[in-house]
Length: 378
Image (cartoon, rainbow, N blue to C red; front, side, top):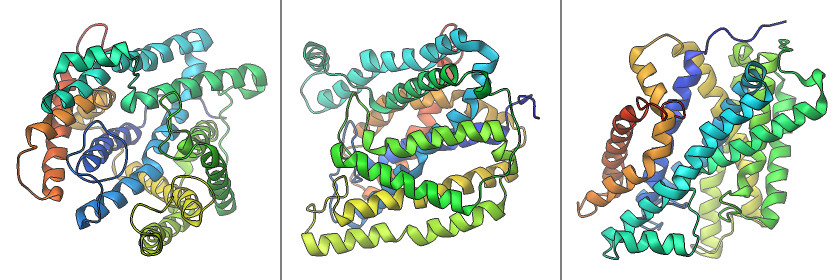
């Protein structure tokens, strides 16, 4: 039987920093022609080569990166609950997830929307007043904090209902599941996603949450919990991962090929990938887990083998990653608007704005993590 970890694995914190930077780049891609919801677009999605590249970039990210966050969060949840107990654990979740969510809804979300309208000549404060008067709730990327808070409370409920036998203290190492389990989980996740999207298509928000993606999020959060209890992350090997890296490589081209076929048959903008039981919706639902499993496993193994050593620079980045995730919308939007009149190709602007936004977010987050009261939250 294993005891709870004495120290955090360096590579896991580094993965969260890298995924946070990828979130910023994802939203930068939407700004310059990629699909998805964001506060401001300079370029709408189109048939331009840059827009098609951004579409594939965003679709690939969406297949795995937020689910990866949930897996990593799930990995640390049982140990945190065991150390703190139910009351302190729940209080901590509301402090570290609920307060940033509330701050974004009340301050950062409206401010980011108002920056956009101000740049368009409609006024900053009138937008703020309009949003509050009409009770418009903008949770932005803090939907993740909202969902993770719900998942954490659900896990507490499950532990209470299951009794002592479910205690995360019982860390018994077990082998990483074989390929049949990976295949069955990918198929089950795809079928569940397809069923959800029949009623709640991708792009439809309910309480600020895109439930169309939640089949994968819930499953990966549960996998993270199981990985902690059964010590899967330390046992993961290339023997386990290689078939799913190959599967991801083979599956990935299916989506761009499907997009090309759908556009040639139905015309641009007339193909439904987001919900229902069309062949395009089925393709997208099954494509996601078959790409995600291989990418997530490869990230974990590469970082565990090559990025698991102490580093002051990485420690600095890691400590600020959560604050960066929270504050990046107004910073990214502000930089994109400042460079709006720069007549440059979309790919070049994506690279420049994305790099500037990442650097600025980490720099602005530095004083936040030093502020008394705030540093306990972020």
